[in-house]
Length: 172
Image 1 (cartoon, rainbow, N blue to C red):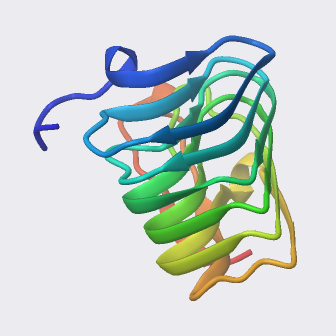
Image 2 (image 1 turned 180 degrees about the vertical axis):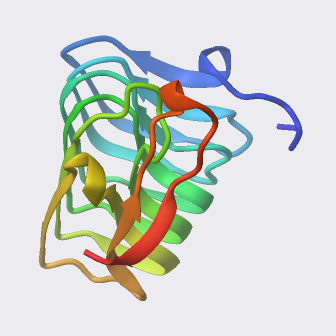
Image 3 (image 1 turned 30 degrees about the horizontal axis):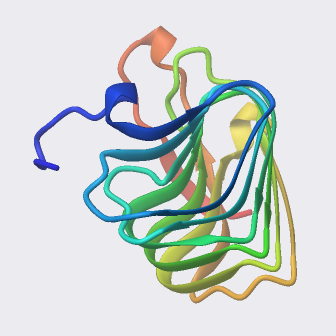
């Protein structure tokens, strides 16, 4: 995938509708986007060999469950949470990543989101999760193995009010 190409739904390997479940899948290298969840969804034992943009983008509201599976080579985010809702990440593996989970820092109409991570193993990366504390985001976590920061707080913003970027604060 060329570095300067804008990536979107047309470049996505799987687009999951409300209530969908995807299990026992390996997504190889050179994909634009891995999976879009347009509503509540469940991913079970889904693996990403080499993440290009984001492995998983939670676009819709509701609860997304990511159980087992893992991702390698995500220079930025593994899981991008744009919708308003909750994400459970259970027994997931990430290696060579920037962030395993990130709540959208500058979406239009930005909203409060929540994430629960347990039993996650993260190797050779940065933040396990990043949330916007000023937007009301909440994070719960237990029994994770990570190299640097478990929970990074950000001051998120809303692009509806003009162009903006989130500001990194301290740990959650």
